[in-house]
Amino acid sequence: MGIMKELFKAGLDLLLPPSCPYCRKMLANTDSLLCGECFSRLEFIKPPYCACCGRAFLGGGENHLCGDCLKSSWAFDKARSLFAYGEVVAGLIHNLKYSGKTTGIATIGWLSRQSGVVNDLDDPDFILPVPLHIKRLRQRGFNQAHMLAKTVFPDGRKKIRSDFITRQADTPAQTALSGRERRKNLKNAFVIEKACELTGRNVLIFDDVFTTGSTVNECANALRTAGVKRVEVLTICRADMLLF
Ligand SMILES: [Zn+2]
Ligand SMILES: [Zn+2]
Image (cartoon, rainbow, N blue to C red):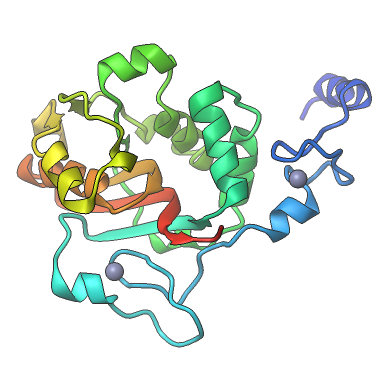
């Protein structure tokens, strides 16, 4: 950081002391982007977890396949999430998605660098945020998955591409639907553009939340059909492991 920038930041910190983006408490340590109490409530996903879908297992031991992955196969090769779904991380994502508050974005990026999960992924040729339907994108003004991908991969920004996948159907809010309904609802929802650029490449699908996995799976399906070689998935959190 240049000296002027440093001075500017110090001045800004005096005027607006940095606060926790979740509970608004003042941050004692300006190197951390979340207060200690909120940090302690996060559940970082760490091994052992399912070697395929990344669901965490309680207790120790090696990674192995979970019951679901033994029974059925996903269209992606591997999925990982940074956190189990809990109040703090859900709150930061919710503020971004529904109130347009970007204060938690830097915090999520900072937290992602303290997770070992990202190192468990291959280095992709492209990072593909799950797209919103154009109608939803216009309502919201931004795609939260794209913004979050930029903060999690600050050095990989050139790889982040939103021009390869489009979302055709304006699917109703997935949260209101059962697993089977979600899959039916998403059938053919994603269309791949410029497939020739993707053939034989390795990609990482990026989204905010992994709920049943049907959204990222449908994306992976479309990418496979377009000839993508390896498909991995990273989400900020896993909603099937509730912390509430
Ligand atoms: Zn806090
Ligand atoms: Zn699994």
